[in-house]
Length: 381
Ligand code: THG
Image 1 (cartoon, rainbow, N blue to C red):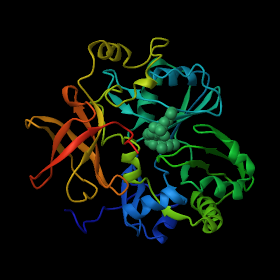
Image 2: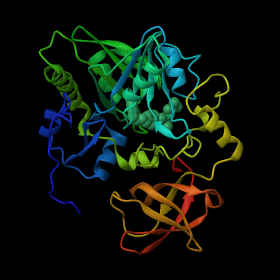
Image 3: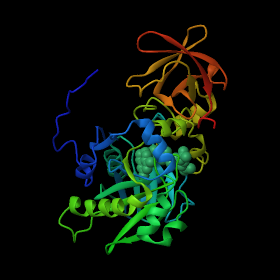
């Protein structure tokens, strides 16, 4: 479609400390998330990257996972207002996946929350302006908090060899980091947060790389970190990468703004388990969520497996029809899975049709129809 049309760069589309390196490695496409560049592909196909990710180790510039730092005496109270997930039992060193809702219980973000201390949190956001939302709410409630975007640029190390690679750089302590926990580790005399997490279904880590003032600028220090990992990674067959669409869809990881939006509530997004103890505290969207829980939801996110030629990554939603040609959903992320050897997709599906095994039609952009089947998420092995 829009081949060879370029995006005009300016300071509004922010580069990261690693953008030079990513370009040197032959990045082919970028997208923009949180007003910052996110690489979308390199020289290899999505499929080659998928196999590499499942066997080796990759380095991803995910700086666009911006941190909203909330600190001060009322920090925990504010965080609790922003999510139905209770943080009462959350300990320092933990990461929590938290839905964030508007007043209608519509999803406004699905960040990872890190507790750095009793009065210090990072909200690692998906693509929406949570800093403004949190500041506005804190101002309105007159809370004693400080909210800012710190100079933190996450770098993800993903794949089964990520542990061995990071042990070779940071030492045995890396092995002690459990899934969705973090530790503070030394890098060149600076303190760095490393969590076992990441936007893939492989083992992996995220370095919440924080710029230290002893360096000239974020690029100098960021490239130092990148180069250190790259050099040590050669022995582990490291390659540059980015969130992989095949791995993401197979794993049922949804992308905010694309697979779900403010029009969707957390129950539709299969995030009910993070809304369980919503009676214990007050939060934005509580009443609306309670009403939705009582009335029941009308659609929810499901997997779809469908026939036909291998589908390249879809740029526009594909309609999902019932066997009697009623519109029952739309595939918002879809691609050919080389493991399942069929096309796969994510779609909200109307209640009457969301049963696993239900037969459906997928309408392609050229008007053709393909046979499909509803499946559970993550996609079965
Ligand atoms: N890492 C960090 N920040 C992020 C993302 C990330 N911000 C934006 C975006 N990704 C947020 N979305 C998700 C979605 C899913 C997960 C993490 C972030 C995830 N979920 C686990 C799963 O589904 O297996 C479960 C987590 C849990 O059990 O609590 O990993 O990737 N820093």
